[in-house]
Length: 565
Image (cartoon, rainbow, N blue to C red):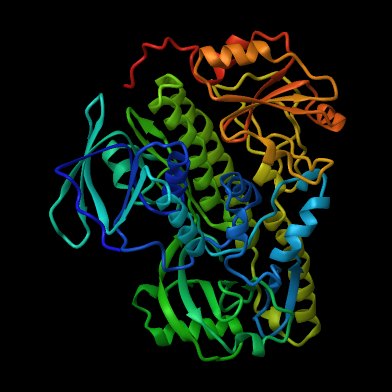
């Protein structure tokens, strides 16, 4: 359907530069709250290339909160397709190691009985980002207050103090249009125009060199219908090649014939000048035999980033997603961190725009998300070191005692590595906002932050402990879409002070009573305040100073006359 032209000056609440997962998720968060937003992206459509391939469990919980986790789980691989990660010398030769994970169909069943670190409303899902973007776009465009325009480029902008003025232009070069917005969010990728215009520098490290997942990588999006028939091993989702000649990994895109293949480039190779013949040669080096492939796209990219922007906000302009942090993709943390940026920023922008919170609330976006980005880039770097610093000796493939010993050494390493990188409930669920100005901390002793284990805690600043209720439903499904005050245990607590204070502050708060005794034990308090992004903001007793608690969590402890600088 052709888009209609803009008026001479397009007025909106939030202008979003970038139509990837971050920008589209933000549009959904704003659209469901009736906030006007305009998304522009220079591409003609959502991504063609597969890009990220793993949606973590916390991201799936957010998709569940928005009502379409089931739709996302139906995308990508067939429901019964394995989600194993397997390591080989070459795909048709020696298998070294394998970690088996639930299929999409199994995940729906297993999650109901999982406890401890994996007590969750959703399990991870292996799906290409290109499919996720299509779903996010469909849902964003369904909101009356959202307009999505691919093929439009943000050319320039200025923060005028009371609003942001911007110029956008069709990518094909037609007449430019003026836009005035209350806020601008740059979700416009690693080369972000928004970040560069603001003069925000990167912090962290880049250019990390490794034998694998460090330096320049070569990517092919391909079809290989014969691959599975030639594979002498059990089918997997991700196939990793470990040999002295060519390190590579390959993720199944559709579970049938499409794959996203990424190979390390060796010193002295000029991959930017490679032809399709070179691409077929490199692919055959990882497979171990030549097989016919159809190349859908090819190109190079850089691994070895662990970068976080030094600022996430200047005045009325914010950055998020790859514009704010760059990852080496081990652990699949870049796209998932970007989605949570949007979740965090969305409800805060809506609260300020709709007059339900002061501008000071927006300061908490950087205070919360920047430390999380630094944490997550550090984890991704650790995973990349684990896989990329392993040295594959030439003898690894030999039919000899030394070759067998080398394969045993590799098997031990990758058995350990696979569980480090791909069984990460601690990374997924353990991110916290303890230093946030809008969290009412309680000083509780916190469990350690480690990648492969997660201990649920209702201490304010983190994800609420999850539980399946006696009726088989998820506790998360009972949370209100905005603020939830949980009253826990068989004896109902008096919540009148919180309800009165919320009304006086124009907070959209709903009391949810949960009599199940185990929940009172799980949260270690009779009351818990859950934010719109499903983060515990406060927990405690009915006798607490309700007004002070609620003022703190919406940023009202700062005088309400504050203006955005």
